[in-house]
Image (spheres, rainbow, N blue to C red):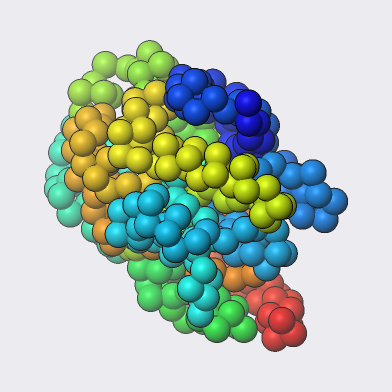
Length: 404
């Protein structure tokens, strides 16, 4: 019996346990044993990097889509053959932003196969917006519209118009903020990968628009974790918060206050939504074992086919990476399907750079610092606070990028 080593990142004990019926079905069908390895979100990159240096890595791995470019630059992966890609479904089958993360600029090779999708959406209370005279259809269509929505809620006397994590370290802030930066026609790094653009006027406008929304937070809502924000919303203590497409199942588990679920609305983030997710990659060591290669291709084919992607959503509530699978799902609330379809059609992923993981980790810390300082006085101009941390970051990475 063949054995495949499959490493998966994320909230793995829950995800692996949830998809175990699928893996067991594949094992039985192909007489293949799958040995899974769990990697936490915080430790996964370190483990993958260690594999590239010291060997002993998995045959197949589920990684964050944005990690592909860094692993390619480390010469860790085995590219997929054109006939394999065709068998998996071809690029047209998968969401384009996730597929783009599977390739490198100027390189026709395919290094990853999209597995799951992820993005952030706004959840809001329809009844609260209505009482404040706010039209839900236009409340979040732009950064300016969202600012006016929160201002109107605050003026109407609602203590917590919205909640967002402002705890000491919040990695997802970068992905959420990307919508505002791209919506202002800004970018993180130039297309040639040689210059940081966060200190340029367009990106600064997006940063300003996003951070100024913190003035509408109640001081009692400072320092909340993502789980605490969800709990406040479930209790009816906030009108708006940001979460993943699977949020409703967690709200239901929190014994929500009357009216919360019944009046739940959902909308895309203003600007250009960020799209992430996970991809399946094969370690280059597999090239020495044709039998393992064939088994891996069988498993990827199985995991990415439409019926499996639908079943995986039913087991995990994780969004599939295929449009045809998404369109057959019964999302909750029902209007989430159209919102997700819109996001997948209009959103984008980060540009692909060899050292993006390093840039991202440092940028998350910079955004944490901006958040902490601005919350000390949200009546002050936020731009000097942003520039205080962004300018040194840009200067440092401009030197690094120019040498690559």
